[in-house]
Image (cartoon, rainbow, N blue to C red; front, side):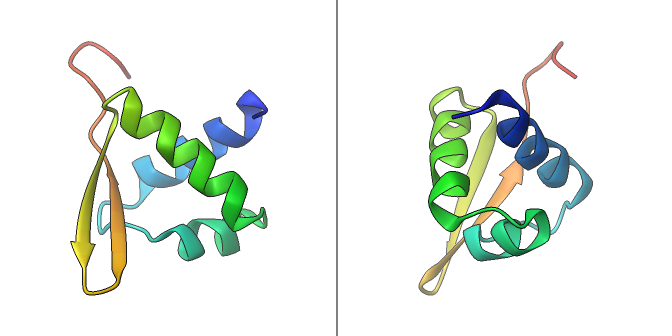
Length: 69
């Protein structure tokens, strides 16, 4: 995945503290849901986001790391 798209996802998550679904992110950034899912999987693996299930949906929140902006 291109780093620019991952950065766009990160910036959007940082701005929205209410949590976003994959579809919300895809619509806001005008990129495919699959691209968003790949970016979120990478961020989850790096422990930079938190995921909270709400019914069938999953809300994604930016948590970052201490010392990382």
